[in-house]
Length: 148
Image (cartoon, rainbow, N blue to C red; front, side, top):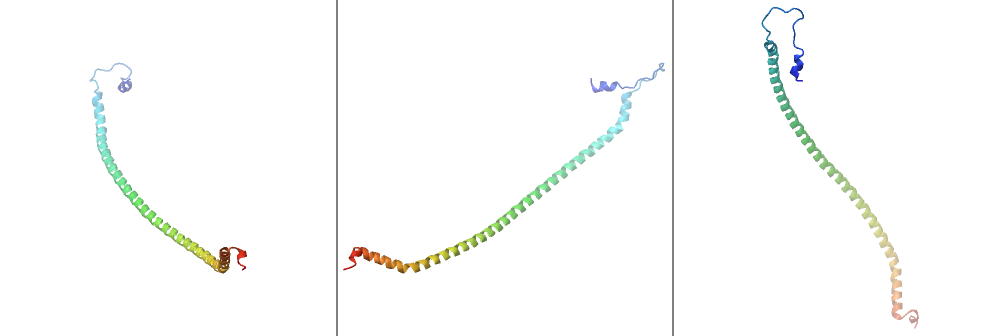
């Protein structure tokens, strides 16, 4: 069933009772047109206003998107700058810690070297004497060769 057919179920009908004297049939379309024209004319101007408002809203949305895009780019750029500074700061701190560790390791190695040299100096005379005795013994043919 079409919508128009549905609406026709509610069309105005005559009053119950005896038939009235003949008259001119009512022009319902003209009556409806006359009744609806001011409302439809108001809707036309409202539609134009709505289109104008929609266009202004689209322009404002585009402006805000561009502003947000610029702000996001600035935030990202600032974050990159901060990250570079933080990286440099951490690297400086790590370099300092590494230098301190190297100084500590070098000092320990120098202490060990000094101790080793001290031990070598204490043991060297006895070692040289033993080595000379062993060489002499080997050259002369053993302990029995020493006694003539």
